[in-house]
Length: 408
Image (cartoon, rainbow, N blue to C red; front, top):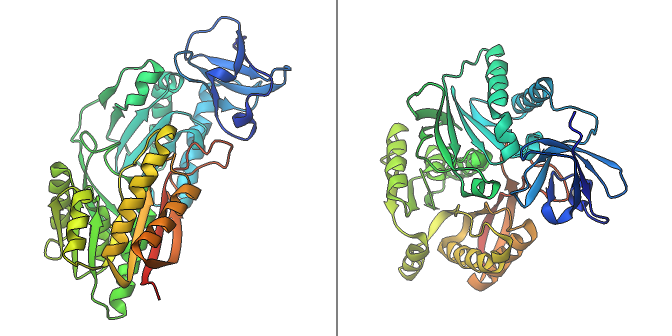
């Protein structure tokens, strides 16, 4: 067991004491013993109280990421295999595992590591030096555990190409782990077929975190149709068409999906054809921020409006600017929704917290001169769990569905 020890300053470590996993460089008083970045170290409070063990990287502001709260537990192969096994058992209990997130970093007590499963392919994203060293063993254990369940993985692709790796002193990397394979995979989610490109798609190839939210919109549209309503839908920031296709499968009379990316729209059109929905679900390449004012000016109204924008901020210091952007886009979305129609909106920014996002929506409703009747509030799918902790590192997705009513 390593003798190296990280000792916290007096009054610091509030995050890990509240259940979080990170220790920042400015919280550390001293490091005792010889270490190499990526090593496992003991962590002690200023008075010698044992806090647990984690891996260290002095190049990163997040200097230690905790692996266990048990100070005498070694990070052995058995320890890692048990962590992976627990992550898989959790997914089996809470979600359809045909395509899902198998490992979600800190929430699965494997900080900095993401592994997504698309049918028989794994896509891995490693964001921290210590976990990068453990990655080969973790992937080996994961494949073994899945094979015990009769699931044979035919290939692994790495998407560790996020800029955040540079802050860890790690190069951005992308490519096959093991033998090459066809990186275009067909998956089925909520009854909708998608072609997923794990090599060139955003993040790991597909946004699995919206699975339940997409199903909620499909169900809403289906119920509207069952009530005899005509349903016209606009899906803004559609990416490869996921919300639009769920609305189409729910029976919408017409759906248009909008995105600025020509490549994403091409893939969305392919997905519509794949599902036999091309007659009712169409897509257009346009900047949503420019298009919505034009539609409002023309007097367009939709029965269902869906806003799924990219994160408007990825840093804490730009929250005010992001709030302004969310306020504006939500106000325009509400103005496009007919009286009695339905409006879905979300934020995928970790830094746009629930309270701020909720306040912004209220301000947008006031500016749009509408009243909102909340149907439900949702968050990320259960294969993207988050631990209740002082930092809430894993909590980022907020998703509302409202009925929009004219002020009366």
